[in-house]
Structure formats: C-alpha cells, structure tokens
Image 1 (spheres, helix red, strand yellow):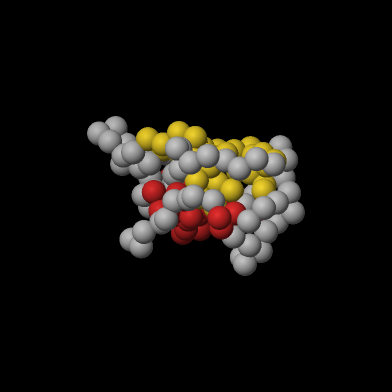
Image 2 (spheres, one colour; image 1 turned 90 degrees about the vertical axis):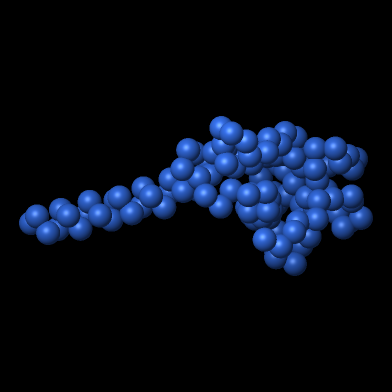
Length: 132
C-alpha cells in the first residue's frame, strides 16, 4: 500500500513540476471561428504595426510568468500564440503590450489580440522570428 502511495505522490509531483515550468497563459475567445489548417498563414504583428481594416476580433491572450517558468522567450511565446490563433480561427496575432525580461521576471510578458482577416495576411508588415 505504501508503495502505491509513493508512486502516486511521485506522479503528482512530476505533473506539478511540468505544469509549473510553463508560462501562465490566460485566454478568452468570445468569437471563435473555424480552425485554420497548418497551410493557412498567420501574421505576427508587433505593438507598432497597424491592423488592416475589415477584421473580426476572435479573442485575446495574456502570457505571464508563473514564477517557475522556462521556455518563455519571445519566439516560444509567439509560436504558442500562433498555434492558439490557428486553433481558434484567427490569422492575425497582434501584440498590444510587451514587457521584456527584467530583474523581476526572466520571461516576456505579452498581451495579445487575435483577429480574423479575409485578405492576404502575407502582405502585412510583421515580426520575423529568429531561430534560437
């Protein structure tokens, strides 16, 4: 019996460590659209980039440091945002607020809005992610 309890305790501890290492992501999708395929392009717009006209707001994301976060560099966060955008039918990821890592947090903290645009998003000025 003690062996089973120890096994369960180890499993729970392992899950907590894995979950605790990810950044905290808060999401809200009041206008969820049809899921996009991997072939559909998703534009990544920075704070200073302008949005096109004729867009529909799909939802918003907020990336925060959970206190034990790892893998929370800018590229990782934007790739997660792109994945969540595709899953919810958005083809524009627009950063509204960006805080770089500092003394208090080793992670980027981002506030992002997700939009659906019927035009060609490849023609928009956008962020170019770098290889890590």
